[in-house]
Image (tube, rainbow over all chains, first blue to last red; front, side, top):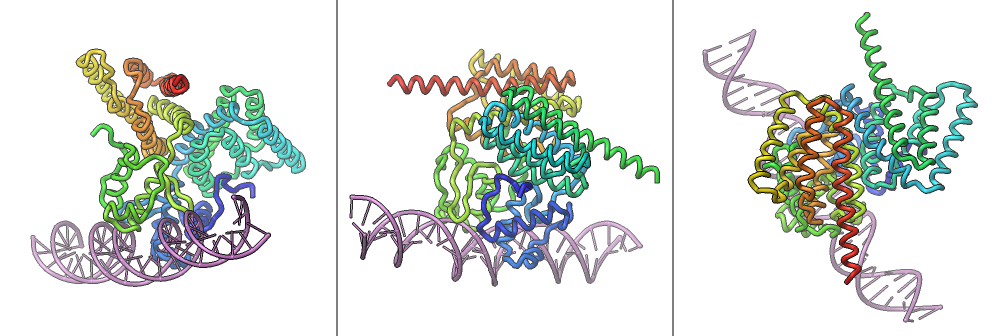
Length: 232
Length: 232
DNA sequence: CACACCCAAATTGTCGACAATAAAAACAAT
DNA sequence: ATTGTTTTTATTGTCGACAATTTGGGTGTG
């Protein structure tokens, strides 16, 4: 499955299962953003004891999907515009660096695979004839490959293991279904070119611009929505 | 206390206390890097039940000080040279961006405070007359202020709440007692200048160079040590 | 001697109950 | 009626015990 977190290990324990279910529920908004989490209630819903539910909550906390205050309880993270912009700023920094490292550390084979992937995406795009085909799968697939290509475990863990859960959550809840399809595609192509040229500096620059453009696109949309809301 | 994590909330629960004690023990090497953690043993040592010890372990996991495998157990993170370099690469990306944001978002008052802090450090330096005074406290204090100055909660949490525990651990275990004293000091001064000029681009560039220089300094030391080891 | 298999011991995962804390409700006083 | 206080209720934190899994050793066989 393309969308899956590439660093996810096989699920073994029941807490793992509860974690996965809750993760999906939170990302997709079935458990509302900002809502309080009642341990007894959810334990009953998922048919587990409070201990294992708390274990699941701890993992959700690790990927910044829930926040806990001592003696008060857990809340699902609040999706705010500020939070979204902060997330993109952070992505810009981390993925930019990951891209630079990828240009330095990816094997020739890995680069070939990425180029092939892009070609497949191009074919799909032709098939769907200009329709904004370039949906999450393709986009996430590309970004994951670059991040993994950095061969930097610290970066990989931070981005794939933590940030991207939030990214997916925001995409779901704000209905951001991978905008800028064609532009994003050509930007990806240029980034891959820089990587295969082993030009780390350019690769980082392009990746940062790519993410920054996405952020600005969001900012514009938000501003537009607020204008529309004001004109009612 | 200067060295303290600025994002740390007041300790209330017993798991918090165990977490803090273990954190310090791990950072300072009293619990050996790479060693396996026996839940029953440590629970006895800290006089708590396994549940609360596991709660403490979960928090240690959140700041990347221990790693856990299902049905196998927890290990203290392994301090390797590769890990150290990866950590600095990540710091370069995150703190660079934080510095850029600080230049954009810090209040004039915050900037003044930071300038005052640097002056105090300068005085201390004169007192100790050129001795490599510029120890951890001053260095961490400066970096923390910049990070907090970004006013970006995502960056603040990632760096202060997670990365810096590892940074302190490596500093302790590799005996890196803030080298490059005088150089680091003047670099800090230039960075503050860029921030007060509201020059985000330059601020980021300087911070990245500052951290990269620190990383290269480490790489050289390592290479040197390996040479010495080889000549025995 | 090597290898596979099985068994025993120890460790981790899960559970339900109790204690400590915070939120909510009821009440009193101005 | 509103504010401040007390009591009640509900939720979270902690504990010890049991179940499931892994690990190490021992035994047997090729």
